Length: 422
Ligand code: GDP
Ligand code: IMO
Ligand code: MG
Image (cartoon, rainbow, N blue to C red; front, side):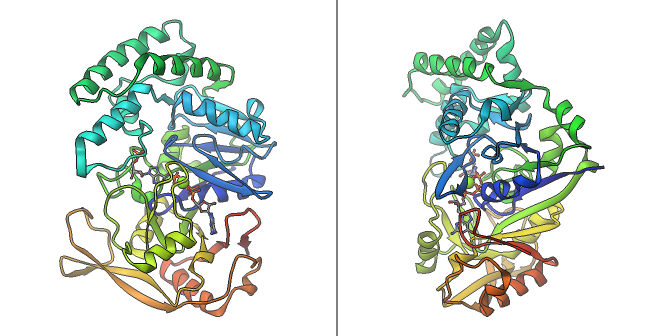
């Protein structure tokens, strides 16, 4: 029996999932996104060009691959129309190779407005959402109030839309948010829905299950484990299950079909948006990580907060998803640091622990660090393990020992080619 393999992020997102999904795609025939939506920004680099994908799976640039937007994803017609047009212009075969689940929920213009209004109302306590309407759309899904892609094909779609829109506008008014032109937003939305209708809409759970034994399938996650709705740093999280459990719900496959779980992490940590971040560096080292790692959001352009690698959080994420294949990204960014730190435990309210506390937001968490000597060598041209400097090895060996498994892929730059696999 073939298994569905999974690529997911083990930190706070932006680990490099897009690069790795694209890198692994030649081994797979189907690439499927199972959660999230256009809050994601997955960067791929090949032939000297960078492409950022938001909702489309990262296999789209391989003409032989089928790319599925699963039922667990939330889709904004306006954004995906623009994204499809962008990737077609970049040479991808989208009509033939992209399939939407009819059960994926639609992000309506008023979901985006609700996201903005709710963040505005929260003031300093805001989540720092990407303002893509993610939270309000999943809220309507769980509240049994949403619209799905399949509804676009129904004769009374506009009627259903108007009922929800009316409710949303009342709420938006209550939150005192007035800065929008609803007629323009409606027009843009319906034009985009007409555009989507021309693509393949299917009950993808049947499609995927019918291909499990004959095709190699890769499920691509968005965001990261510490942004998971259940296990992340709640409430500073996204609104979906980003861990491997989300694959079953988000694609409609049974747990016994899950195979290799590729867990991706950066050689350090970043976070964008608000919320706790125990190893955050608000000093020169943090500034240097941001500069060298070009740590600015692929979706929103916001500067990412940077800090040292956090093994407490990483081990938690590995446990939650049953990760059995580790991939370390952005190793090149650590060159030229005199010393590199790794957090191996926390002191929470004065007590040592190696577990993530119930509420990272209220407990005082002090990271405990192990310090390593840095290396001056540039890693970006390394293509074999044997070319990596000794001090890098010391760092790598320590991580492998702590994490209890080998790190099988080491990424040393954004390009497909800058990937070392043993
Ligand atoms: P994703 O959301 O997990 O797909 O990650 P993003 O694309 O948002 O952010 C990762 C960023 O790091 C992108 O700009 C990538 O091009 C870049 N990147 C990926 N791997 C590496 C690497 O090994 N080294 C460097 N320097 N950049 C990388
Ligand atoms: P990829 O797939 C990093 C963060 C936002 C915010 C919180 C909630 O590129 O790794 P949301 O818009 O989902 O309601 O925002 O989650 N966030 C991400 N951070 N990478 C992402 O995606 C993210 N998607 C959401 O910054 O803190
Ligand atoms: Mg990203």
